[in-house]
Each structure stands twice: as C-alpha cells, then as structure tokens.
Image (tube, rainbow, N blue to C red; front, side, top):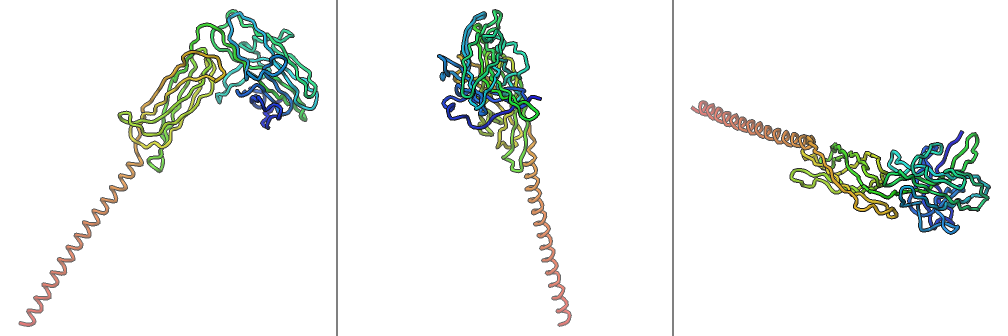
Length: 359
C-alpha cells in the first residue's frame, strides 16, 4: 500500500535563505505548491530548486519561460538529500490544475501529463528519472523543454516534483516536494477574468442592523493567461446609498479555462427592503510572473428584496404597547369619571336624606 504525507515542520536552517512551500496533499491526490523562495523542501530529507552554475539559483522561485511554438531550451533542476540515510528519489514533471479550494495543484504521480509537464525530458529521454543520493549530497539534473509546434498561445502550467518512498509499517509513504513550472507560448495573449453569475441572500439577526448579505459569484478565466484577482464587495440601497462597509477578498490564481465559485459575506447590513449587493473585480498577476499586458476588470450586482421582519416586529410591539397604554388610559379615565359620578350622586342622596330628617 502506498500513501503520502504533508510535512509541516519548520525547514532546516541551511535552507531558510530561500524556502518555498512545496508539500503534498495526503493520499497522493495532488501536490500543492507555494510561491516564495527558490527551494522546495521536505523536512524529512528531500529538497529541490531551480539550478544555475552548479548550485541553487536564488533568483528564481519557479521555472518560468516565454517561448515560441516549436522552441527548445535547456535548464537545470537541483535535487538534494537533506536526510541522514541514502535515498533513491524519483524526479519528474507533470501538469498543474486548480484544486477545489482554488489552490495551485499538480497531478498525482500515476497521472499522465499532456501539457507543460509532457514537454520536459531529462537525459534519459523521458519526463522522469530516478536518482540515488547519499546523505547531504545533491545533484544537478539537466533537462530539455520542447514546445510543440502547434502549442496554443498563452500560459501552460505544471510542476517539477521530487518524490521519495519510505517504508512505514505495512505501507509506503510517498514524500513529495515541487516547484511550479510556467510556460508562456508567444502569440495573441487574451487575459480574461469574468464574473459569469452572482446570487445573493440575506441572513437577518436579532439586532436589526447586524444582518449579513452573502454573495456567491461564479468566476471564469475565459482567456489564456493565469490570473489572480482582488475583489471589493459592498451592499447599497435605493439611489446607490451605501448600506455596509467595503469587504476586500483576494482570489488565488486561476489557470486558463478554469471556473470557481467564490463566496463573500458582507456583515452589518440592515433589512432595508431593497438591497443591491455589488462586487467589483480587478485581475492581478504574481510579482514574479511574466507581464501579461492590460489586465481585465469588471463589476456585477444583484437585486435583493428583504422583508424587514425585525422592524415589523418592533413596530408591532411598539404599536401594540401604545394601543394598550392608550386603551388603559381610556379605561382608567372612564372608571375615574364613573367613580366621580358615583361619589357625587351619593353625596346628593345623603344630602336629601338629611333634609328629610331635619324637616
């Protein structure tokens, strides 16, 4: 049986200069990668990084290329055994995709790469090879990337993986780390990120002014460039009057052709009958990504009609209290008037009786 693990312990001190998170989601389904420094490291003993001049290329956190269709180029991948025992590691290239949570992920080990990962070949003529490493040793692996002559313009994504199998009882544990691979094929770039739909709902609160408006929007990367986004949401009312504060939310990188449902919650909204939830979007790219030209932006809103039950209940309570008080005052006034009439009548009756006795 074979499984995989995620190592979350701090990296070795000698690798802190340029660390990138490159860890695997359990059960070998995907490899999720970070974006910070040059190294991708597993604290149990394997690491990998872009190489230059026989060592780590500290200037790169990813393999990123801009090429013509049919172009071939060479590069190097440095792998290291940071553990205390001899390890045989498998180094391979594969394709990327967006996981359900929106993160950048890589295909599982047994999946066949058909895009950027398929374009990589090592000295053995394939896109994977095995390397035996002594404790503390490292090796630079040259590789060739060949872009197909019919490759479509735009971004193609993948990753370079270092994998090590270790026995753990009755199972083999697959520890993997990876570096992102981005290939931009020259041609007509069409950055496109749109809000294809938006749905809104309102959740009231005991405090009438503390309700929440939830927006669910469908985002689609309709272009051929990998894009992230910054979104700003707000709820407005009649005549565009703001009914809430601004809520900022960042959208992780979306690969070309992918879609995602994003939920934004705007707090502190009263049930003002008519609500106009609105979200604006501005596409962005990573700081170390290739320039994609003018990036798209847009906005989308929806109409929401809310019955202000809390206010209606408050009106009913206040109105009922006022009516009850008014009715009580009327009853009290009537009773007081009746009592006065009664006492006056009694006084007159007693006066007449006294006159009869005197006469």
